[in-house]
Amino acid sequence: MCLDTVDKEIKVKEGIGWKVFVKDKSYHLKSLLQFVRIPIGVWVEDKWTGRLLNRYQTGFHLFPSRSCAQTYAYSHEIIRPVEFRNVTATGTSSLTPIIVAREIRIFTAKEAKEYDK
Image (tube, rainbow, N blue to C red):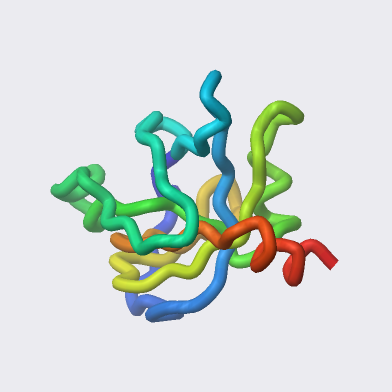
């Protein structure tokens, strides 16, 4: 996904957000569009570099809330809470708020339970 609108100033530098994933046949989580396996519980930097449409630097696209992530997720996709840092852009896609961050850490199952309440 790409941002339809990009905020002039980044609204958040780091925090907790939500990301939509797919599971591969080995039950590993993969990022949508990049289809790269992402380990759980460790910080991972986005391997892609550059600028999208010359408007903002690439990174993992995240949602500020579970409900925002649910607007994009299909029934077979997985929504997990993630920590994020090194934000390169904030904005919207189809009127939904989006955070673009260079680094994320997928919460472990135990940590995620705290956010599933």
